Image (cartoon, rainbow, N blue to C red; front, side, top):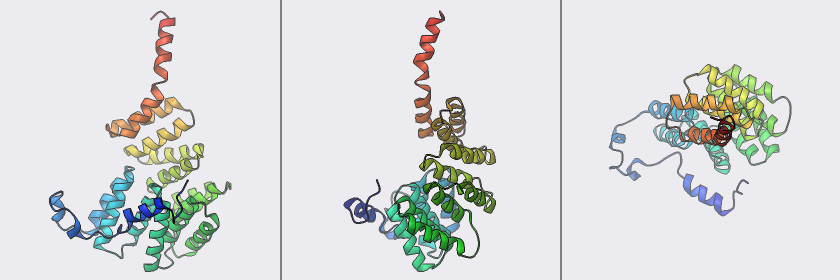
Length: 270
């Protein structure tokens, strides 16, 4: 259940994120990370945010988007990324709040409108989400994110045109992250078959991306395709041996097999 924006949980989140986009350098401990004394430009922080996002490290990515905004408050992709990471972290009221703050600086920005639409959708405010998504798609230019959010609204409303929207997103941007994050949307709504298809597309586009294999393995496990899931999770661990979630998922799938294998071996006289 999502917390109401006026309840104590939401207030706690507000304290956590009240200075999300700007953290004064003098307020940080100087002894903890001496390397941060070196001046870094926005490209540096955006690069780190992107790397962590592609590895599913959303809270770390959120911090780096915030650091990029400290350098350049006018960096719209950092505002959008910040909102997207809050949504991935299930901080929906905060995602809506920060998209509104960003829209005060950049009125009618399509991606920021899409971010607010997605946050409102996750909170169950479908009417408001549709209005925002309509506005986002009317803005100049095109982006994968606007179509992904539209696809999410279709999935949330159990409409059959969601595939068209996710396909449009992949046509707008060829990045493997697009089908992967579409897969995450489908996973959220328990549309496992389509989630698997999108995750498969991501893994095929980026065979060395361990997070794509992890998400694919999760989708396959949800569908009961244990053998395929084990293969995908093992591929993830080949690329990132200490991936804790992949290790945990793999153990969950394989453990029930062990007692059966032992009994079968005894039955066969092995």
